[in-house]
Image (cartoon, rainbow, N blue to C red; front, side, top):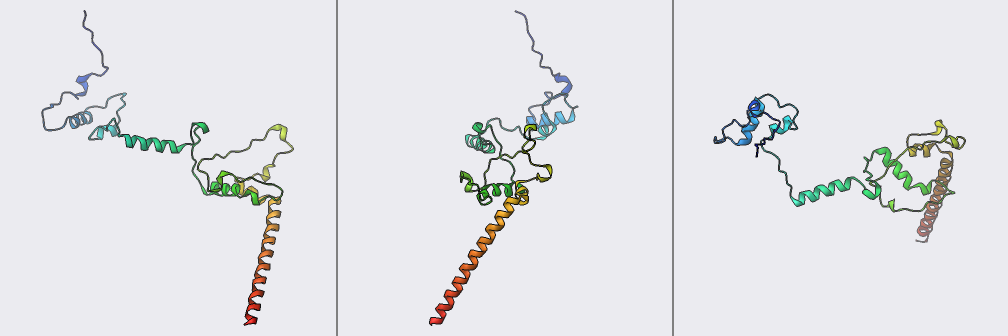
Length: 195
């Protein structure tokens, strides 16, 4: 049997890490830290300067409750693997207004009916927005570039059908309110006249 030696790849003599006296009052980790900081930097290592400056090595194992909490946080960041891990995007003011406009789409068009979905309770947490890319086959049915807007709300604001319908609906509501108010006023006048 021959003596076999495994080469660790690090020369101990050059780094002075194990030459420190263990029997002294200082802890071994502080000796290693002081040896690493005083000696030259170790080339091509995974250990960074921030790791060396720590007084203790972080624990490898974590408690079950902490692990469960971390898994829960990770799980809540995406919709799940059935939805191809769709991330929850940041809700800006523009996206919030677009989502509200999509939810209220039933009141925008007179000739269309939109089924109420499950998103009526509030704004969805997971959603994606995209841009429609025109194909050359739909050249004559496409939206001209001057009519394209940045958000859905801006497109609805500039749509003539929506403007016409909303103006008509607004005048109907005003007329109903005016009739109701005048009827109430008339009822109060008659009631006061009887007394």
